[in-house]
Picture (tube, helix red, strand yellow):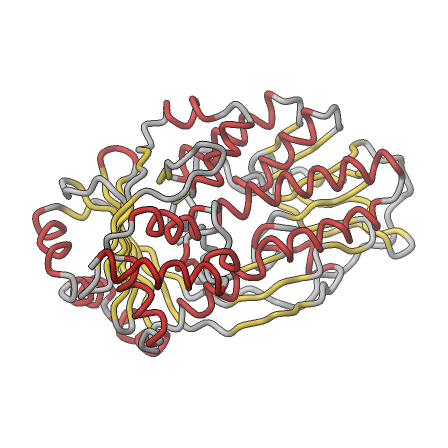
Length: 429
């Protein structure tokens, strides 16, 4: 699963009031980034490395946790390497694994995903360490960073976003201005709400998700277990712990709300080998639970502003794409903003960013939506395909590369690709 937003308290979804009465003042920054976790901090870092004047704010104080499935797919790890941050991530103690088990019961596939820029490792990093590392990296790159900053309003002049107003860590009211305001502030983004951003490709939630951490569980690879009405994932994470996560049919939400621990352990019984290993261990933290698994795209910009990560695109976490998406879009958006500031035409560059983003994720989005329909049995065609993959390590690697970010859905499921897999199957049986 990818990183997930979690809101158990009621929050208004009405557009925030727009303050249009502020005194005109010159922009102090090229960009203000609202949200300083992995997406926002990465964007701020990349812009600052290009010499842009950047302010990044977050209501949290780092290190702090957030709801997440922690998995950075190889495509995201390759970007961390490109940014010169991989050794720092390793220093946090987050385990790197390259072997994946995809177990549907009667058929189990194991292998290493096709590489991205030579990278086959996935890393399951606790957000307490990863987000703080990226926030610090933004500061080291030259961005101004402010923790404990609560954004209350987006400032507008003549219909265009020009800044933010809020309270800093001391409680003092502050207004700051920039040439562009960038929202990396989640599904209920203040920036997106302020400009009433249009949604499209919407999909209703079909699952709820829960996870916790267990000590002394024998787990040294990424393990995925699709089962009727369920998807269970296990993977090692920091401090010798194992993350065990479940995506469950939306119809079972009341059962999990009543007693998440009992429902969670009952689901594990469908995977005896994993259930035994978890039973031998000890749960060391509370269960996290979310219903924010719906899908949508937003038009990712408005007058004077842009928004991305979950503020601009969201899907079920079952395919663990969250941080891969965040890092890819950080690069794409930083390129667009930098070029737009240079040429004085942000709107054109942001339209180009939207097209690149949509082209990059649309097929994976649809694949994720299909996989998240856990109440539906696998299509016969998919069952035959999985059976044909057994004993074919090269094609298993390509299949696992779909989630890794090295093989696109369209490439793998192209008729010529499927025909090659089918043709090779009889010789491998």
